[in-house]
Length: 426
Image (cartoon, rainbow, N blue to C red; front, side):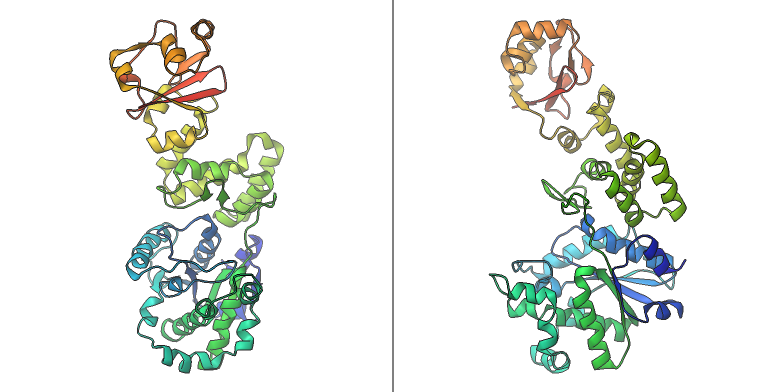
């Protein structure tokens, strides 16, 4: 496949430097994208750049994933209003290992000549003295050139200003490209459109210092049609690490995408072909209420980031809220998934001693938990079949005990069709 043609139909090219396509046409080319190691997990905001490397490798080229152990100690001012906290080397190395494991789900690190490689810029900068950096690197780029970058201008005009540390970031990133060009034959750097200024500093440094020709491609920043920030929820970033964002929440993020956003995401974040995408969009338009596009998108990404088992569990868990889940499904949910599914549902507590002794359903519903205002109201709803305990209809004679606990500490009560309550043993 042709790499740039593939990116074009997926709407994944924002800027591309002249001569890039001609360079790629010569044969296998090496390219890199940098990743911020200030967390032990990537998030879905990184997916667009990851997919650029995926398509690059599928086109027969060699991808490099650079973890910014050095630049992570400085902080990129692009798109930020304040300077970040700096991390120590031990933390950064740990984060690097975690990020590699996530990238291994997308890139092949053992496939021969175009195997993916991970590099850390700390390895070639840690012994670089300040004086040598000024002499060998700083002299090639003027202050006028650096100040002209939007990331720098925006910070200089902000109330907080910009430190010399962050001001020098583009030089350090530029040297990364220069080092990779010289030692790894990397001819192309890619990234988000907000990185264009930093990337072309690298191409300029390569031209001035080494007399070489290097290239750049950037991808548009992903936006949502409603104006909200992509990858953000009320609880923060949507992470690739299941301990930070459960597979259920991850699945739900994609499932809840608008029709317009899903049509954009399915091109950018899946490996479906153009014909497959066109077919899915056409089928979706015939019956939008079935959300076929969102379901295909959510399945594909959840399976690749997590696993088929996690996808199946997330899909089953999502059915519970719509009254389709069974008691068995509920029993099999992990505590994390259970709490994710019923996030925001009213919670109340009950003493462990009450359950050990056994407690009648009417006393449980009204006296102990207050789910019903009175015994009479609870009795009427039970007679009408309007109460479920752990997805099973309950009668007036039910005695609740510890055997009903989900994950050893919860009981799910459903009152009517849509009102849920989570009772926790305290």
